[in-house]
Length: 141
Image (tube, rainbow, N blue to C red; front, side, top):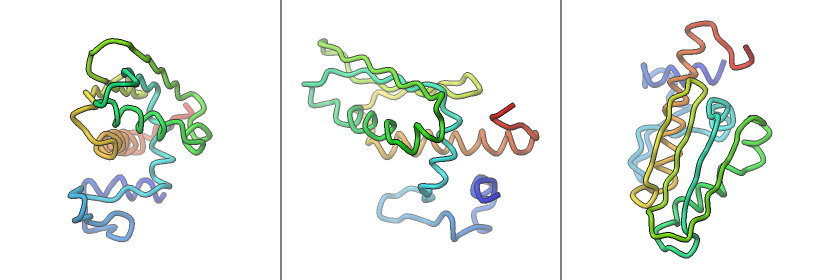
């Protein structure tokens, strides 16, 4: 499938230059397409976002909340739970992604741009997708 080929790009970058290409402006090693992200969001079980809405450091957390609530993600993964904690304290904003393999990725979102967080999440999801494909597993199992 197309998604499997894109996942294998992590192993052989020269094999599918049309799906993922170098992106020199943003300094990311590959471009993850909209279709790929719609598939890869299925590997995310929960997203926990906590922030203070009037704190200037929460820009990435608020934008990330907007992005993960996109209709294409909720249609692709209806089991995805998005938990938001709006705080009135000075704690830094945080984002935690939980995956189907029970692993977690934690970010202090003030230190990252939203695209960098999502890139890391989708890169990990690609590795999960490849692992599931090689083991003959499916998310529907």
